[in-house]
Amino acid sequence: MSLVIKTDCSDIDWCQAAEIYHRVRMGERSPDLLEQAFQHSLTTCAIFQDNQLIALGRAISDGIYQAVLCDIAVRPDYQRQGYGKRIVSHLMEQLDVDNIILFTSPGQMPFYQQFGFHPLKAGMGWFRHPEERRQGKVID
Ligand SMILES: CC(C)(COP(=O)(O)OP(=O)(O)OC[C@H]1O[C@@H](n2cnc3c(N)ncnc32)[C@H](O)[C@@H]1OP(=O)(O)O)[C@@H](O)C(=O)NCCC(=O)NCCS
Image (cartoon, rainbow, N blue to C red; front, side, top):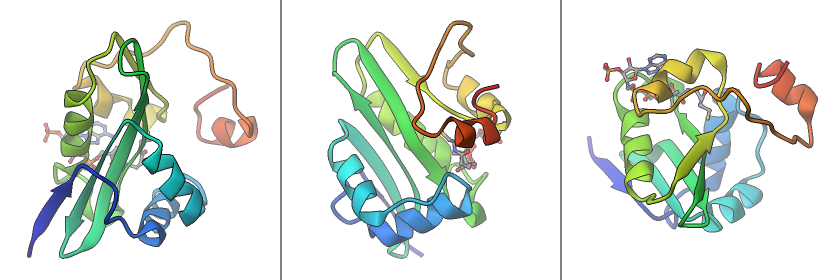
């Protein structure tokens, strides 16, 4: 079994990526739009087991003040084996900024607290589909 960690997104099969987001209930993603989003990100990370994509994530940033971690997901059958931690650690190592934020769901907040993330008391978000964010318990 071979494990490969890649910090560019050139070898990602975007249909496999969309399938992971579907399986972890992070929405129905278009493979083409996913590819564009990852290509426009400051940094990305993907983990492959035997050439199959098992975990991925990305960060968008101005490289100075602000960054957002996005789309961090691990295939359900590979969760709780340290892959999510490797993705987040790599992304954060690449970011030398004042603030890093992310959206997550209440059940995943303890996962991010171990990297030093704090719950926001005064954060706000604009969403094209707020009802989906409400279902995900991101907003009231
Ligand atoms: C959240 C997620 C990225 C974590 O990745 P993972 O590979 O399952 O987690 P890891 O195995 O790297 O966990 C690292 C540590 O965090 C802990 N952990 C993982 N998920 C946790 C959770 N939901 N709550 C509390 N602790 C958690 C693990 O027990 C482990 O602890 P340890 O280092 O003391 O052993 C993954 O479970 C996932 O893809 N979930 C669904 C998608 C999602 O909700 N993404 C977030 C949207 S931004």
